[in-house]
Image (tube, rainbow, N blue to C red; front, side, top):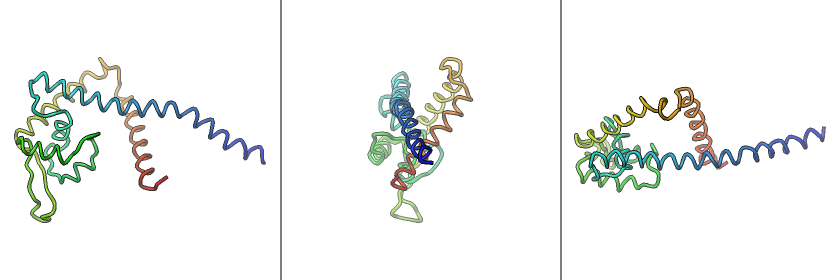
Length: 169
């Protein structure tokens, strides 16, 4: 019985040493992919001579879409690595891409939505993503099944990290 007890921890250690480099590579890729997405969006706006807003702001506008959200709801969606959501919302309101109004029900809450100018930016990003969806398999070599598997894995990783914070694991 003691031989079996000793092999279980050793097997977990072996498995951990096997998964660690792959896990660390995935972390690097996730971070790099987000930065690359920002580069792709910036490039699209540069080609269109739309340098007024940056890629993070464009993604904020895209993710709001037709919805009306509070600033905290936007922040919790969490697409804005290394950005100050409040600052970007303020700038986008000043530049005329967003409406910013106090909620009629809760005066402490601020609701944001897109102006027609903001919807134009949303449409540019939407068309960019549509173009990518048409070409990613043929040019990028990533199939629909691979995306499904990737999305499942990324969702599990997100849930794992959420649990680490929520339950202080």
